[in-house]
Each structure stands twice: as structure tokens, then as C-alpha cells.
Length: 125
Image (cartoon, rainbow, N blue to C red; front, side, top):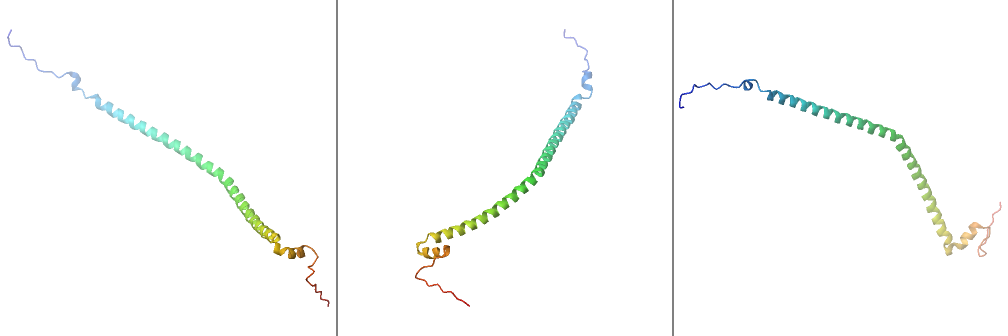
């Protein structure tokens, strides 16, 4: 029972002698990951390029409309300035017409009658 048993050399299993495939699969996974990142970046760039083209075309389409609106706005501002000048003139005239101290001079302006206290001088040649 206590006999000496022949020593068997520890043999390395055949599987462990082979190069590990683990490293190859990690490289493969890295390559796959890099390809996925590159594909995602390419898609993002393509989408952004399409959006940029759409935005630029929309701006180009709207430029003539904006210019015509600016011209209309300038025309309206010029008309407003003209009307404001006229309104100010009419308001001043209304205040003058409503002033009681100028009633006689206004009557003389709008009719052929003359104040009896004034003498009309006619010069003949």
C-alpha cells in the first residue's frame, strides 16, 4: 500500500499548448468596434450634410421674399412719414381755426368780406 508509485511526468494538455484564440477574438472585436464607430460617424456626417443642404436651400428660397418684404416696409415707412407731416400740418391749422382771437382773420381768408373797421385801399395805375 505504501508502495512507491511510478512518477508520471505532468503533461501539459494539448489545448493549452495551442496559441490562445482569445487574443485573436479580441482583435476581431476591436476591428468590429472600430468599423461600427466609423459607420456611425459616417451616417452622422451624411445626415448633417443633408440637413445643411436643406437649410441652405431654404434660406436661398426665402431671400427674394425677404427682400420684397423689406422693400414694402420701406415704402410703408415713407408713406407714414408723409402722412405724419400732413397730419401735423392739419392739426396746426385746426388749432388756428379754433382759436377765438383769430376768428375775424379767418373769416377774411375764407370770404370776400372785410372787417368794417378796416379800410380797403385799391391802387390804380
